[in-house]
Image (cartoon, rainbow, N blue to C red):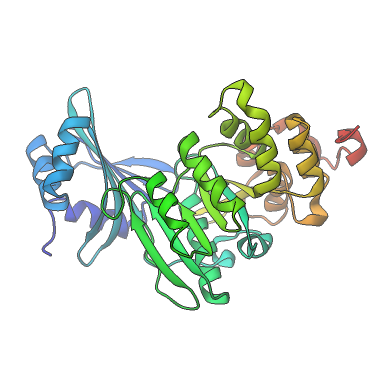
Length: 365
């Protein structure tokens, strides 16, 4: 396939190591590099964006865009790389975001992720939820988990994505990757049918609503490992986000179901490195230990953070514990950690060597 009309822009994104390209009709193109927005002097017009859309999308996808104002596709720019593309309208103008999906799937070590990620990836069943804001590296971490499984375990893995980002080549595992809108009509439909396809592991690109969560819950409840993502900032907010899918009267049985089927919540944020280019991941790790199970069952979600803090021997960590470690290792600056912390005052105390004991948290008291 010949280079598209925006091929030079996408090539510039890759050569600049930009994570995203932001394009708005009649405005300068902007690149996100190491978390910062950098504008260029290139200004595309409406005709160019319409022609680009015709180059990369099918007739049905274009028709759907004109009906709904939104389009998500996966695009491979020949000789440059794969991009996750979203086209949309704002104030009647065509806008586009293209996220570069790097071909090479990085290891946990290359990404700077904690060693407990190996253990989480090897769980036999349950739901593992990766959380964070857009651009926090959830998809990259999820890909590293799946590739670890691919290299170490003989499993049948089904991914359900919108759109497909990383492409996996069978190693020890047998992969099937389904794209919503092309291979299946919806996440829910694909999840329903996946249970009849003899999977060991199901990866759901994003848990979006009550229906998709219940389908994932059913898969975990029948003995499968389900890996998915959710927009939430930490473990306790993740639980609350899921409960918010339901009316108050429905929430008690859902908490019980989570207590029985949740395997782990891995929350992630990216911070600029103290020295050199790039960003480092900071993680909160919540594993469903007996203490976490009890707190879920008793609806004591406000105690989850304290339980995580007191359970480092299990491999758990709060954001503050992780941030402190990254500062001690010289990976990130104190200033940046304080901006990223959920509790910067406590983190300041940690920098001064002052820590609350597990008894001070009164987790189960």
